[in-house]
Image (cartoon, rainbow, N blue to C red; front, side, top):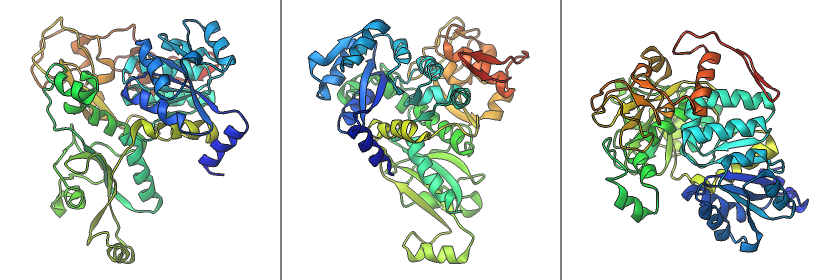
Length: 449
């Protein structure tokens, strides 16, 4: 039975999948309306600190005002859901407490909030779908392990570039093709010095948040997405920060080729990205050594070789995300997850000259940007993962473009993402300081040391 047929069956049985959403920004709002078009699924609870955004998302999807209940506590929310109403709340931590919800989508892009909601959802035995790739590349391996032990699904979202690229990668590998490079097209011109202030007017024109746009323009989002792809495929970054050449779709097989063939790859089997008309698509460059396969590819007008590209010219972001919910709930499968552990890290780099005592403002801010690096290099050099950087206080001055290390900062230990990262480092044997690994046992979920 197909996924669509399973959704239709849930609709006919009067048991649509009950979904909770954290974050009613641009992507979250689009997702709510998309689910409203579908059978077998309902977004029944939304959490957003700006409560009117949550209300607006439901109204835009056709939910009557009278059917929306604002709740600050579990009892009020449960009563509303039992009456067939929709719940909105400022308290994101409330959603994992709501028994009727089968899955929670986290769509804020804030690493700490994503970690906290994912952690709570898993403890509450709910499937968790992260549109928050920033959380995934920081503590995804631990969250996946917890979810596996709890019998629920931890997954990234269909429609985001990592998942869209993974589809092409798995297609190529299932056919026994040799993958030289997997990656995405970058939509925005690269400007490492971009700030929310410098992009404020453009952000208003595009109807997006300045910090979100800044994370795109300064390259951080691309680094995060390619790190998620690396951790899902086992393909390492081509180099720190990747190459990111300008390329047309037709030139992909020529540019993302080994250096001995005139390409840019120092080694085959990596992740990278391209700037140009590849965006908003994703790609995989592959090769084959078998003459019959080569002849067939040429006959099928895939090009002359020796390398070829699989190309998907779109990714539909939150419009596709409901499919990840359906796969998790109905088939028990993840769309994308860090099945290879930490292959890549996103390290923290000074965007401008920074001074001791300054506080880092986080992803999409004016103080730092992210660069992808091989995880073993990041560990050896004790480089600070970007997902831990928000609210960290600098202990020394740093120059523009200087990578930040653990020794350079005092972390905000109150953050869930920091606590989970310390546990993950111990579990994986990657602790930055000598600490005796300890097991985590909480709410029946045990993670051995």
